[in-house]
Length: 234
Image (cartoon, rainbow, N blue to C red; front, side):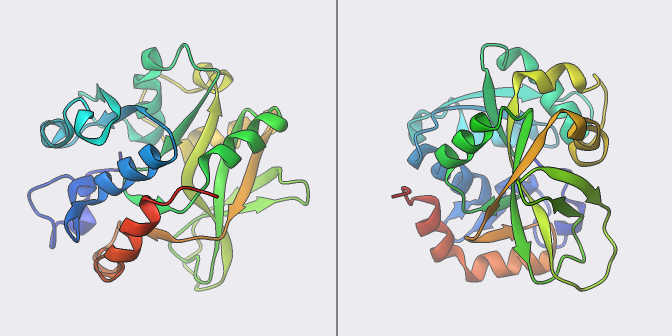
């Protein structure tokens, strides 16, 4: 669901980052709409910081025609620990989506799942080519779509292929995530490479509200974001 949102405190001081307003909606509402309009109805929200505000805002999901359950962290667990903490909700699922709560990527979820299953991948990530990858780590992908390595943030303003924060995980991933605080990007994905991690490049809108600058950009694009979230792939 994203972290504590410390970089956004100057503009969103009293709410979790995922509830930051984008036009008339919260950012998380846009993600719920995106999933709902592509036929994904059962959601598990991993909550931590100010979790009660998220639960109050979304309840059981009935208002959005989805079913929402909550996996609440008693202490910060990072992106990996949050997934591990929710594993009892996922035991009946052969494959499942995982997505960040503080970024929006225009993606066809059905296509991403088909791509994942056709390759018998342990994990598949949606990636995006960006003109300035300075604040992201980059992903090296071979001609067959298999991820070969991850490069840490270099701080240099250069184009690159970056992790879009949307994944498909096989059930095989869960036993490989330690039951402690950790990062999917740093602690889990590098260990999975030998088992087959694949990437599918996306070409639509990508926005991360992790900084005040990008949050301001999201405000300018709020109408487009709403239309994109409610778009059914053809």
